[in-house]
Length: 73
Figure (cartoon, rainbow, N blue to C red):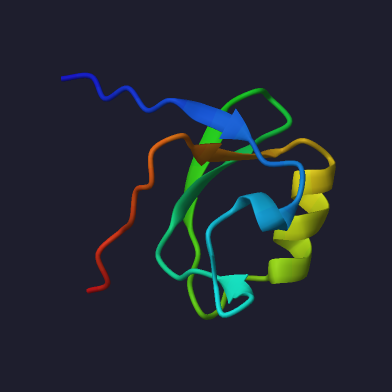
C-alpha cells in the first residue's frame, strides 16, 4: 500500500493551523532532514514552538495541503 500526501513548505509558523494564537494540537507536519528524507511529526502540548519556527524559516517544515489531524490516544 502506498500513501500519498501533498505537502507544501511552511516558511513561518503562521502558515500552520492556529487555535487561539497557538499551534493547533495534533496537526501533523513533516520535518525535512539533512539527508533529504522527511520525518512525520505531530504538534503536542510539549512541542517546542520556537524550534518549529526556526526550522520553518530554514525551509525545513512542510505541511499537508489538506488539513489532517492525528487522534489523541
